[in-house]
Length: 187
Image (cartoon, rainbow, N blue to C red; front, side, top):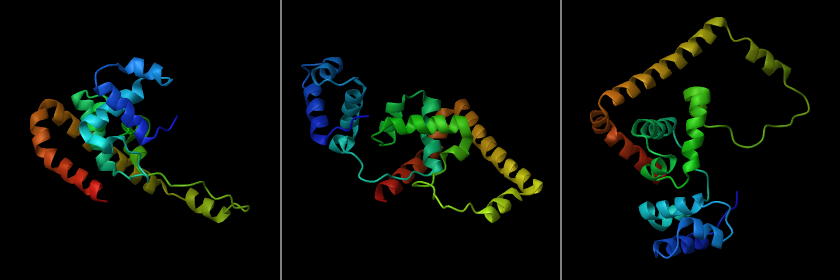
């Protein structure tokens, strides 16, 4: 995927907003394979201003609760990835797409933070550590499964409650969403 400078993005957004040219024509004019990035840049600019076009210097960590909230919002309102990203002040709709895919494939556990970097390449495999990992008792295994089922059940209950009465659900959770997004912005 090509990385575009902030100036280039702003140039295309300005050109589009001036109203003389459409997404497809802009993409052709600047030899871009797709008009989708331009569409995303214009949308991000409309809702977040110049900040919506900036590339993040560091990767931002999002909590599992934040990711679940974004996925739940998208699924219940029928919003697109782009609309959901704009709603949660993210400038990368592919984050929402990835979170949704991971959630469908692995459940809530798929939304946990992944370890950074490459795994170590030690020459000697740590046999003792592998033996310890294999000694998980049946009871521990069942407890883990129970916890995963409890999490899934809680999520499905919230989803059902939202479908029955979306307005009440939004009112109840609106304050928490705003607080979570403010916390992340200040980090």
